[in-house]
Amino acid sequence: MVSQETEQWLQGLPLGEPIDIGGESVCLLVDDDGAELVLVLLREPSQVQIAEAMRSGFQCALEFDGGLAIAEDSGALLLNRWLAQAESWVDAAEALEDLLNQASLCRAAMKPSPARPAQESNRAELRMRAALNGGTS
Image (cartoon, rainbow, N blue to C red; front, top):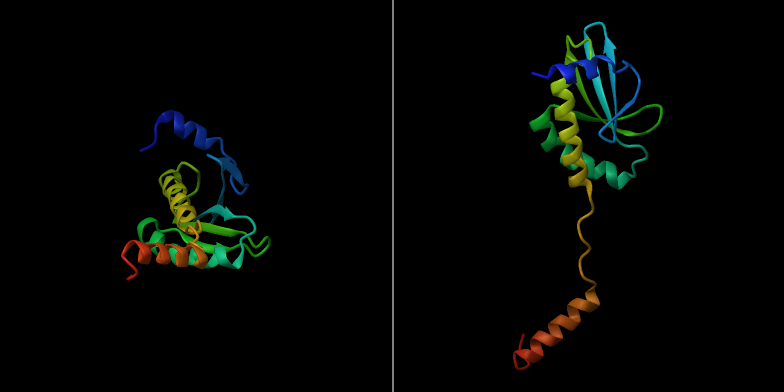
């Protein structure tokens, strides 16, 4: 249930046009039997970013119902969700919150893991450990 103030704000949002909500570009595309809620996850994703998104996407989809897509026109990586019977932003309010949360989790999962120490550093560490252990590793 959304507050009256939030409902009024949602009613003023345009349909079918990208808008900025909390730094995210989202759009509600209304059709005859529902609406598609779309969030731009990455505007120009690399193949590595797409692969990382796919790895985390299945886990996120189980929790949030949003799926991944590539925009045909721009190649942007999207999160989207079909909302049966939705006709307005008010109808999409709960799904919008879920999609924003899903985007945060996807971005966190797509961040590269910290680089492993260089092999040279590992060798130096092994030599130091061997010296400290009296020549045995």
